[in-house]
Length: 62
Image (cartoon, rainbow, N blue to C red):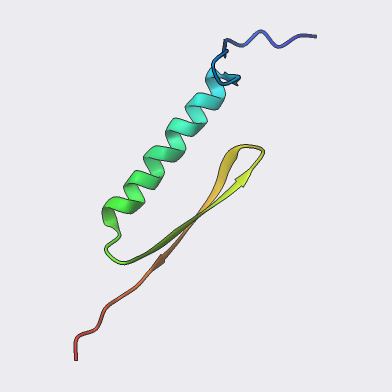
């Protein structure tokens, strides 16, 4: 059985994989928009983002 999904031959990704990338980027953008201080860690398995960890820092004034 062969894979009949359209493939972007420039980078070897199928349309479904490109969609996954677009969704992941949109989620990271949303996190970045709400984060003032902190860090974001992406966990990737088989070229797909499967987890986004956000550590937010709160700055206290003395």
